Length: 327
Ligand code: ASP
Image (cartoon, rainbow, N blue to C red; front, side, top):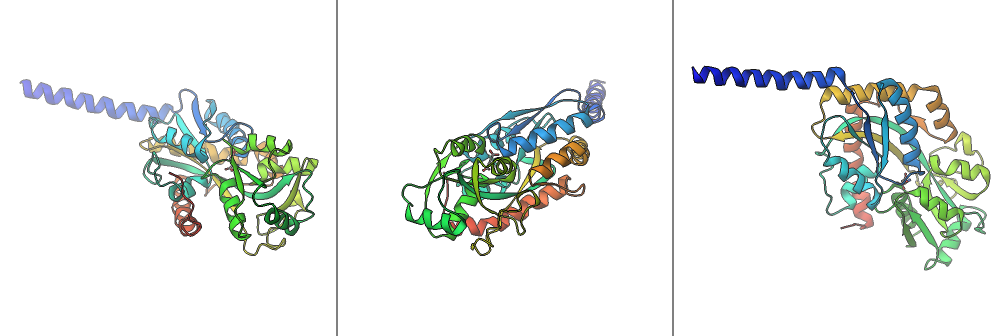
């Protein structure tokens, strides 16, 4: 009798547990969602996140609130999400650094390929090589000559080891075979403030942060890292045109959730992401900033997982070849 009662209780509990998972999926989301941006407010990852989060919120009927957790090239914010509960209410919007930091860091607080669930790809963004407004160099060749001649004093801003600006700066230094002085920030929002003020000399950063400043003449642009010139920056040559053979860097963004987040939640979020990327306001702002939204088939868990895996494989030998690691 007792055993039968215990079995009945266990069955009732299992049914309850099952139905509570189902009801999470059915009513999801029932409250606001936090999206961690692993860089400072006002920078390019933040800009992309706020645009997309606003449009996703409309579709979800719940607010996505951005929280900026900058530091250590994006790995602090990613670590925060890796250790959060997988309940569908914490997300991470990160970029290519999710892949490069897997090799760059000898020790990470999380296992990149096993600590997250995937929502989808968001956008691809080119980088720009820019300098303070009063930089004398007329073109990319002139900038390279200047950097080589002043290698002990010329400063290159970045958002820490693992950031896209760090990767691009590292590739630039390796291409010109000259190590330069790097200045890390918690994001390229504050780095841009210092570039505008002339406290740092050079930066390689996403067009989402630099296009308006270049167009306004408040910083100088020397190259875009895309294979072709951009419509919004027609006068800026590609790095290859400027003399850096093979210098192409494209930054991609993706949305992740902590491991264990129910599939129903990541699929619902992926649908909201697809709707957001078709939003005319998002599309117009992306176009103004020289970036393009991911296609509906890329804004999916399966596409982001494949992208992350292939990018880890792609950058591993490059980073190992450069011999740059962080502890
Ligand atoms: N653009 C930055 C990077 O270098 C990060 C940011 O502030 O969005 O990765």
